[in-house]
Length: 221
Image (tube, rainbow, N blue to C red):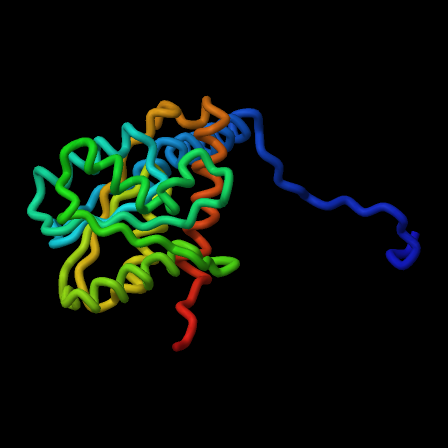
């Protein structure tokens, strides 16, 4: 039969053997395991610059506030800044007006002098990039106070830390910015994938980090 009218042809095809599949799956599993082990420490770094000012967001729970207090008292810091959004009517802590003022009051109750605490309430938030907006407001207040060249350390909880660090660095482009990640107690950080809260936090912050690192660009002034 002529080659023109052949309906079937024989071609050589390479396929993985059983041993090949085992090696491939083991390699893939090792990569996933490595990512699972190292992604949490990567997103929750501790890289303090021993700055003049310690900054954190006012929504912190009590255990995290205790860590902030210890850091402030043991460090070289001159000021402790808490920044946070305004409380709506009906909020259990509405007497403080904002998360920033509530955190300042709680820290003062733990022994931190009020004259060393600056609370910065945020009354208007943009639709997106809220952390960057907070950083700009903090920078504006510090500039007004004469701390134009003051280095800062950002305190955050767990995997939120690296994204906050990146965005504060973009806002404070001319000064040193460090980061201190407080270990969360809501889940085991060494086995975060066994907790629904751990998985939710890591995956959402990983996506947010990729956005902040590779897509976000500060708006032109």
